[in-house]
Image (tube, rainbow, N blue to C red; front, top):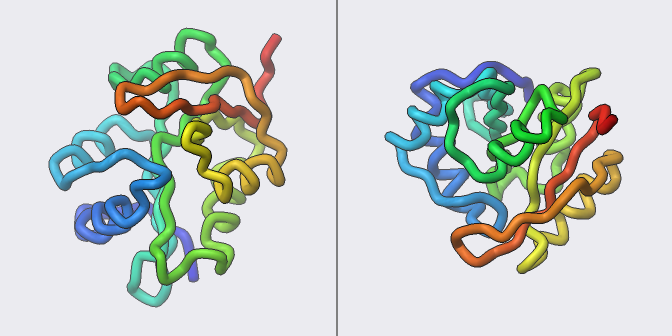
Length: 157
């Protein structure tokens, strides 16, 4: 398995994985993904011999992306890499795909993201805690769920 930058040919698989992971990410369609990737500083896929095993969409600061979570981090100026979404294909969960993606993402960069806490996404909360992420806030989402805002390698002043 190896990481590579996503191409337009990967978008259908990325949408499918996203839609199979709605306990941890919001729904997205092909047009929305295309728009999101246009905002991104990097979109990576984990490629398992031609099959997409997982993906991550990363945004840098200073975009006009209208996400309440992104805007919160932007207003507090505590990140350089915002993880808008990361998801692993059900067939590849618990096989190290998330670790592979995060090892690349975290290479000496401050990282910011959110995880559902109400209702709790226990697997994601445990994963991020094990990697040293710390809570910097909580936000109620339009869908009625609450997220915990997490950072790693960030100078909070």
